[in-house]
Length: 208
Image 1 (cartoon, rainbow, N blue to C red):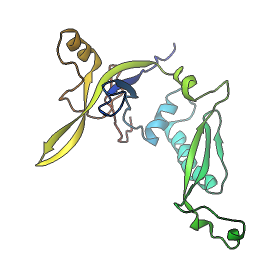
Image 2 (image 1 turned 45 degrees about the horizontal axis):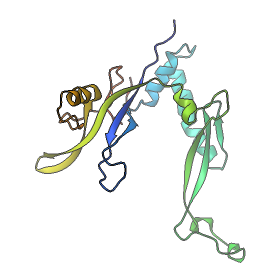
Image 3 (image 1 turned 180 degrees about the horizontal axis):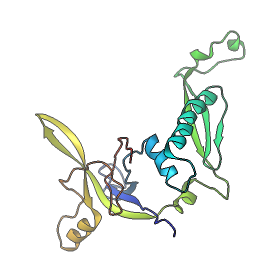
Image 4 (image 1 turned 135 degrees about the vertical axis):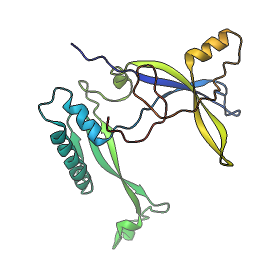
């Protein structure tokens, strides 16, 4: 029996920039769920027909987190099968251009390179394309919430919190002649993997 595909939630956020030609329009963004920890990911893999237990899978993943940065730090791109390739790129200092060949004599690369970044390039072969429109075909999308931001006062200090209104509620209000503009006083609490719609912006580790 095939596993049921869990939907990816799509929220809509209103453009509030009055100087923009898109002012007042709503744009989609992913309803990001709570981040899965390495242990949680290992358990997920172990539960998907693997002959290896969670602790074995976790051990391999931990080794990857050690060895992959080591190799990339040596300028060696690492391809993880059909997932994609991790590779390094150089960020240049503000005035890091080398003006001539003569200036290269005795040049310290640390003077022109501000940082080294690890980048990821998803596989883009025809068989395992994980880029853009092709990857979307792997996802089941469902509309969930209108995302907004409201200012609240906590202990005398003002802070901004993200709020959510179910799109179905906003549409019903609009049909009933109410505001339906997407504002709500229900703060987002962090993502939960529920089929009915999790909250946006979750970022904490989870061992689930």
